[in-house]
Length: 154
Image (cartoon, rainbow, N blue to C red):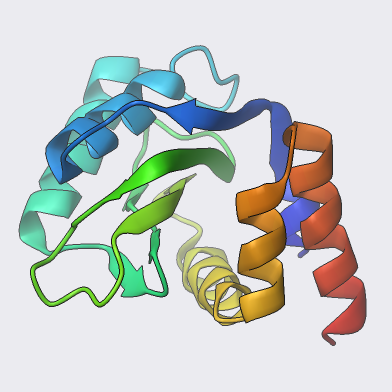
């Protein structure tokens, strides 16, 4: 599984306007609307909001990975968002979150779900990759940065 192959350029949004964590999660959930892998969109959104309420999904490094396993998801999906001005997901976060990766997986894909979150977290700890993602001018550059990082990192 390669993250770059799961990111669809029509679901990469590099100009989010959220000013708070709640706004950011809501904006990301709304951007998932119309994704072909989502069945009942309102139910999917509730699952995302409930998961976020259970515990923050920031991983440090200015990155958050809101995620949910849901019967409303037909296959793995990733929605990418980037904020010009970061938002605090948790008071303890060293850096405000600027990169958000919203993940959805079917409930039955437990192994894939855990593997995807682990891989994404591992890649996003890479300073050079995060810098490239923050500087990407468009979705193609954003995805290309991931492809290059995946090629360099076994």
